[in-house]
Length: 304
Figure (cartoon, rainbow, N blue to C red):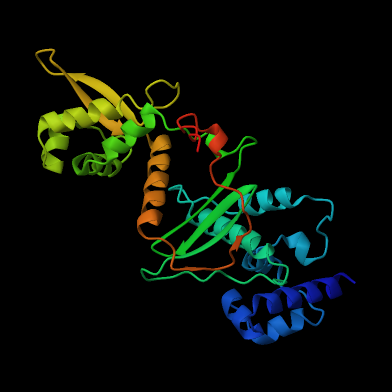
């Protein structure tokens, strides 16, 4: 009975993946005849089972029909991610690839006619392709270009997006700062530094090609963001003393906060280079993105 379950499961997984017995055999380093025997009641060697499970992105228990029906999808995803070995250099590229596949599977699941998983098509040129869902609950956005692939999801707050996003002095100051080319170049240079490396204002000025006064002004702004909130700041500052006890500041970007800068740049890039086409996208909301009743700067309409 177990042999029948394994054979049926293997054959179903292979056909759903759209690969031949020969292609699967080549991946596993065995003959096509071996795969044929497995699909007709025999078993592979035990050391091949992890390879087969990894190839089809399932557990070994699943291959034998022993996957528990009461295990939540969230737990199955956790176990699938944990099953990926992390190399010594902490390169999580395989995790990233797996996560992107899971996200794409969720996008496919939005369409009832999609009965089987198929891999996403990613553009290699300048033509931007996105997959998105937006309705009154919020939105998700999946950029499918090989040049830059990312996914984000944002759930609409109970009182609407405008209850969170406000036109504040801090926001206008940030856009004013980013509106200067030399400030963007300073920010890009800081993001190019490896972890543990710091630079002085004079070095920043020389490398970016601006005056020390301009570099100093940029650092003064960045080191006080966020201005009023507690938490990690974008810029880290350390002071060093020379032989005459003269103090000099060295700067580096906080790695955990740098991700938000890249998100901002990704959003700006999508505004400059909007999508050329869509794949598996659903837009079904007649609700405004921002709620006027949350905007205290709006003037009341005058009487006719």
